[in-house]
Length: 81
Image 1 (cartoon, one colour):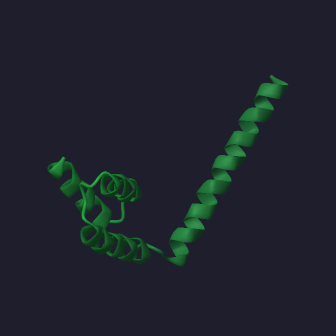
Image 2: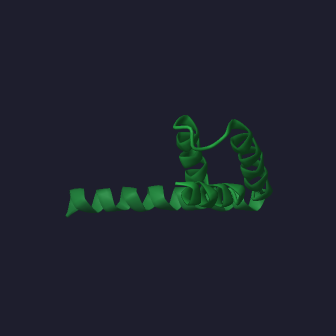
Image 3: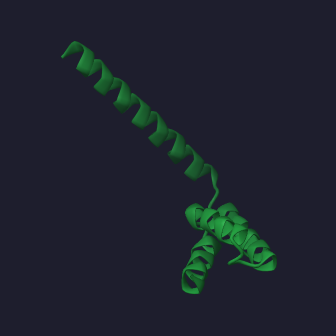
């Protein structure tokens, strides 16, 4: 378990959300100390903040719109088909 926790910490430091959630669960079971979790949470948030930009947000909105439009067209094709 110790090796898995180390890998979760590394991934969380890089901003990976799933690893941060796994670390919270490990903390609840006593595998991660509160101090280690606090340091990792701060590093995780710094990594997430570093990847935010207006251009990324615009791209995200575009791809969400595109996915919704594709879903709508597929649904319409099933009804018409």
